[in-house]
Amino acid sequence: MSPAKKEPIPEGIEDVEGIKTAPEADMDPESDKSDGTVRISEEVIAQIATQALLKVSGVQPASPGLVANLRLGKKTSGGVRISVEEGDMPSVTVDAYITTKYGLRIPDIAWDVQESIKKTLEQFTGYAVKAVNVYVQGVFFEQEQSSVREEKQEKEESPGEV
Image 1 (spheres, rainbow, N blue to C red):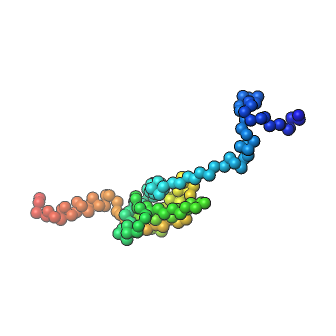
Image 2: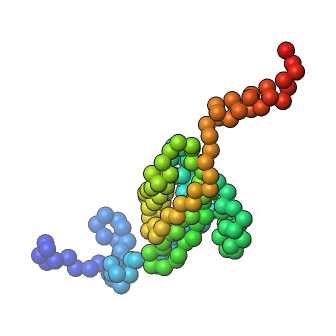
Image 3: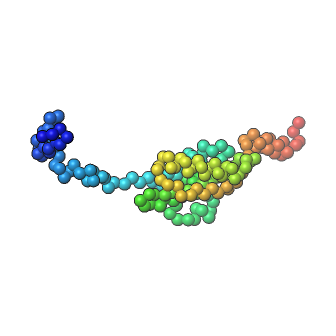
């Protein structure tokens, strides 16, 4: 027997290292592939997308509104609605509903939200991101400005006090 050619050891007989050998049919590399699949729920994908949305400064999640809530089969949570298309390579479509901070350029914020969600979902899920649709639902002001307005309103309501 040459060193390059190794004869198979009969089934059930231990080889030199003490390991029992499997039948030759089981040693075929083609038969070692599993047919299992991994699916990630829409709720998990929505949570990941919401966290990616919150990483963008000057953005807060918003409610999708009445019209979006009437669509059946798609849940909205944290300002994000997810649609997954199953197949050989699953793909995800994301609808993000946001409010932006006053004074920021809305197209830039929308681009940052799209890139953040796309990058994060592809990294954590391995799914292809088909589209990230950003719906700007409103503008919010800083907390300092709103507290100043409240103080002015309180002073206007009680002018008789000294």
